[in-house]
Length: 219
Image 1 (cartoon, rainbow, N blue to C red):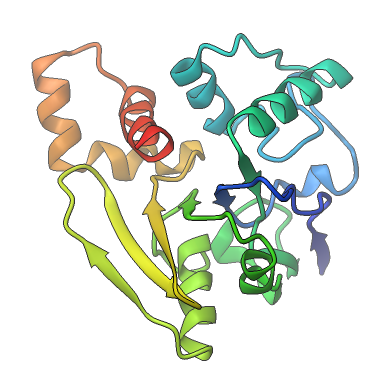
Image 2: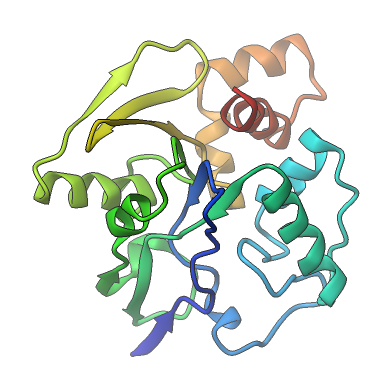
């Protein structure tokens, strides 16, 4: 049984307004066994599309390598836009060494609500995965249910948005398609993607993510 722990502490400061919430980076990040284009930071896997999407949206011209400068670029962006990262899973066990959310066992969650309460400026949470089992929104909903908190949907034609009332604070919750390539099949099955692909045969699943992520991060 492989012990899979989160190698990065939450990246939050007093100015954080938007919080990105995922689960865990690939197991190789625990062992610092990086691939050539990995970045030693949150969502730094060469196979994860969060940073490439943000790179395109904000014209960041990021480096994709295991360098101090690549880490600095990402931290500078987060600080400039008051964005923090606090993945919701602290650790788990795995029988198979991969990054599948469904493969997690004996899951230990972080005190995500505690972090939010201690960061009074947070008014937006962006989940890097929707409400599928063992995804970040799935665990978040489980936590708020145990705390007798409720979220309510906000009518929206772009992506799923909810709001959470926490001690008189209204926090908007945005549900994104996972930045993992494993989500490409589900994207391809959506009516919206099929329509956009029909209109433009060069349209890709990455373009679809950029459209979603643009709305969540700039709205």
